[in-house]
Each structure stands twice: as structure tokens, then as C-alpha cells.
Amino acid sequence: MADILLSTLNARYSHASLGLRYLRANLGDLREDSAIMEFVIGQKTEEIVEKILAGRPRILGLGVYIWNVEESTRLVAQLKIVAPELIIVLGGPEVSYEVGEQRICALADYVITGWGDVTFAWLVERLLCGDAPPGRIIPGVQAELKDLALPYAEYTDEDVRQRHLYVEASRGCPFKCEFCLSSLDKTAWPFELNRFLDELETLYVRGVRQFKFVDRTFNLKVDTSLAILDFFLEKIEAAPDDPPFVHFELIPDHLPDRLKDGISKFPDGTLQFEIGIQTFNPEVQTRISRRQNDEKAAANLRWLREHSRAHLHVDLIAGLPGESVESFARGFDTLVALAPHEIQFGILKRLRGAPVARHTAAHDLRFNPDPPYNILSTDAIDFATMQRLSRFSRYWDMVANSGRLPRTLPLLLGDAPFRRFLAFSDWLYARTGQTHAIAHERLVHALQAFLVADGGVEAAIANRALIDDFRSQGHRSRLAFEEDDAPRPVPVPRRKSATPSRQARHLAG
Image 1: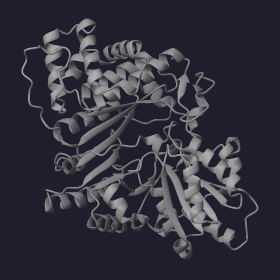
Image 2 (image 1 turned 90 degrees about the horizontal axis):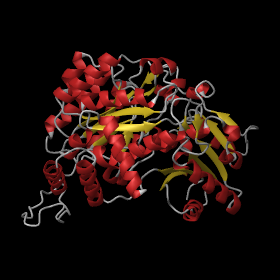
Image 3 (image 1 turned 180 degrees about the horizontal axis):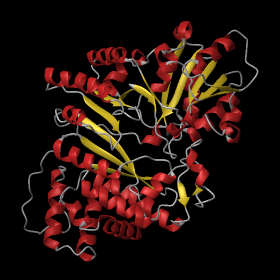
Image 4 (image 1 turned 180 degrees about the vertical axis):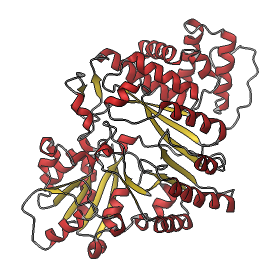
């Protein structure tokens, strides 16, 4: 039973909301009269309503993001029907801009825009004292980071055992890439380093072994980056059989030698980098206010692949204003040649408040009016072609990013990765009409048919690669193209990856 309930709908159970924990940690004297209750998208709305109301809260603080806004809107609508006396306060990136255009904002009692860490506490204190502010829309106050209570003690023992925990050494971003809400920040602000390292130590002692840093620019300040890397290296050296796994987002064209030296010391399965390339087209970069030295970025990716054991997850975005399919294809092929472990083929989204919308008229940008606000067409890419690119993205995750077909993938891509994979994508969709729920064995058979009939690969070579990939995943069933008299190999048990599943950047808001 608590007067103040903090809640959100996460993309998965494994994701523990950092924002809710900041809010609770900064409630001051009201903290003990608060509780956190998280849900997962896809749960039945009536069941969520029932669980929220079971504790009879007076105030509900609800975190709203691009991935949960539709279900959150239904939730708020039902709560207002069943319990109109419940005061609902919204916050989060999805409701920080274009407030007047959103049904969920009209349904709620209050909306805090921007930073909510201290503003939520101020608001609920007034509400509980019967001194409600006159306006419904409350601009969030950006507190000094040194004045914030850190949220990490709010992670429960269950969180530590079962979930991926998020941490941040800094907030904000000094860069102005217009597709990103962080472009609205004036700069990046660091938390006091020793205080932050003390929090990491406490989490580590509690048993946390997976740390996802949400900093937009982890390698902006090299001295800070090295101090954090040294913290984790000491843990790895002290207990090599129980190492932490750490995820950082890197600026691609800023990797000085001191940082390379630190990165090179990490063993397999302990380090992952998310690296945003987004586009290799200099004209598009200038148009969206993105500063990137492509030559340095490529050299750094090459160095990371050849001289570190970090897992590399690199982002490209299709549909940026003025970028054609041919331009995107050149960038894609360039990135494939650099051989990151994963290429996240993203489709541009119009995040509420993001400055990329200023190009709408000049480049005929047409966005989905509903979440996730994905681009549907531009002056350079028509709707039908954008659909093909969306399917390419989905199939790329299945075939390439899954890591299940390492021997087959080079045969499929050949010397023209984008063109050949697009041909496979079109072929597969024409025959299945599906982009989801394609079983792995069915996908293997489809790949064999395409490679031999349309891909110009000799049957014996394609079959051998596919069979070996299939067996390496632990599958025992005989594939249709295996020779009848071929011995059934003993499957190799699949090694569980140390890399946790990721939450896409702008699904994460």
C-alpha cells in the first residue's frame, strides 16, 4: 500500500526502468510512501488496471515511451473510467513534445515535460498537501547532477538476479544529429566520477554482472572512459571465471591510442560497443547536422575488429532526408566490408520533438502517423521501395545478426552485399509473404533454394555450409537436401552467448 505508485510498460521483463528508479530515489521524505510496479507491453490492459488499483494509490506516475504509448493510452483511458479519482502524472520522451496533439496527454491529469527527477517530487508533494498547481503541463527542472540522488539502490535483489541493469556516467550529448532527441541537449554533463564508481562497486558486490551504459557519448572524455574501463578490468582480473559484461555506446571517429590500449585488454565475452554510423554520405551528414569523419570512423571500426575482442553492433539508418537507395547501398557495402558482428539496419523514425522534421517539405518526408512513426517514403525513396527496405531489415536480423549462419552468409552476400541480400529478401517475401514466424529450418531450406537456383552458388558448396551451420546450432533433424546415405552427425552443443539481448535506441527512448 503506497500513496505514490511509479509504473511503466517495458519492452521486456528483462529491462528494468532506470527512469522510475531515479524518480523514487529523489522523492525525499515521500520515498517511503511510494512503490515501483513495472509491466510488459502485450499484457492485458484490464489486468494491469487491476494490479495498479489493488494498492489504492492516490497518484500514479507513468513513464511513456515510443514503444509503449499506444498501450499506455489505453491504460490511462481505462483507469480514468474505473478510478477517476486517481491522479495520473505522465512523463518521458514521448510526452515531452507535441503535448497538445496526444490523446494520452488529454486524458491524464498532469504531464511533466523534459527532466522529471526533481519536478515529479515537487508536484506530488503539492498534490498530497492539497495545493495543486494551476497548470496541467509542468516543464521539468534540470537539476544539477550533483544534487540528484542516484537510483541504483532502487534495483531490487530480483532485478539483480534476473534483469539487465542500466547505468549512466553522464547525461546529454554535445552533438546535434537531427534524428535524435539528444540533439536538443546543450552539452553532455558528467556525474561525479568517484561517486559513480562507488555505485558500480556496490552493484558489483550485490552480484550484478551485466551493465548497460546508456550514455550517448561514452568515449567523449577519455580520462573518464579509462577510469571506468579500469574498474571493470580489475574485476575481470580478480575473478576471470565470473567476469562482468559491459555495453557502451561509442562515438565512431574518436578512439585515441590510450583508449585503444584499454579496450585491447578485455577478453572475449566482456565488452560490447554500439556504434552509430547512421550514414556514410557526407551531404546527408551535413543536412542532418551530423559531424563525422568517415575515414577515421572506418579506421576505428577496422582496428576494433582486428585488435580487440569487443562485440561490435553498428547502426545505419535508411530514409534520411536526401539519401537514395543507391547511396544507402554504398554505405551498407562499406560497413559490411568492415565486418562488425552486427549491423542494425534501422528505418528513420520521427521522434516527437526531433529537428529532422524540419526537412519534411523540402524532401517530401512522409511518416507513419502512429508509433513508431517510421518513414514511409521520401523524395528519394518511394513507398514500395521503403517497404522492401523494411523487409530487408527484418530478414537481415534473421540471417546475419542472429549469428546462426556464419558459413552461409558470405555465400549469400558475395561481392555485392546490399544488392544480393535485397534480391534474397524480395525472393523470400514473394514465396512466404511473411517477415516473422519463419522457423529456422524453413529459413535454411529457403536459403538453399535461393543460393542454388538464383544465387549462382554450386549446390555442393551451399549445402555443406548450410548443413554445418544448422548442426552447429544443435539441430538433429535431416534437411531435405542432405544425401540419403549421409551419416547423421552428432550435433555440437550451442554455446550460450555472453551478449545480452539489446533494446533498440529509439525503442529505448
